[in-house]
Image (cartoon, rainbow, N blue to C red; front, side, top):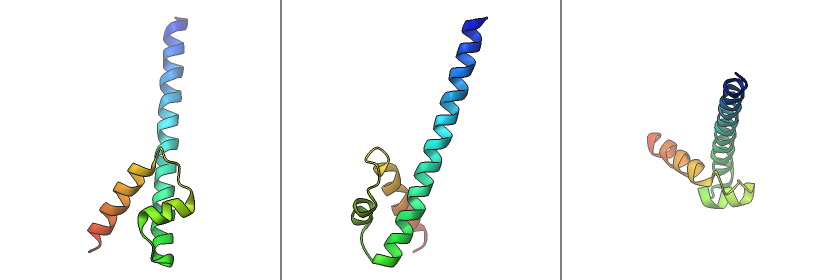
Length: 72
């Protein structure tokens, strides 16, 4: 029984971490888009300026570029 409860707790913790990570990426995307509008710099330059975590940079860059394409 304890193993089942431990597994369920682990699953909930993993879900929570995933939700937090998604929120972190979404926040970074919004910040990068705003900075790009106000500074007229590239996504890479703005991510450097904002010191975006290297672990989420590929996701952020891909999303930003997709959003830019959809507004053209």
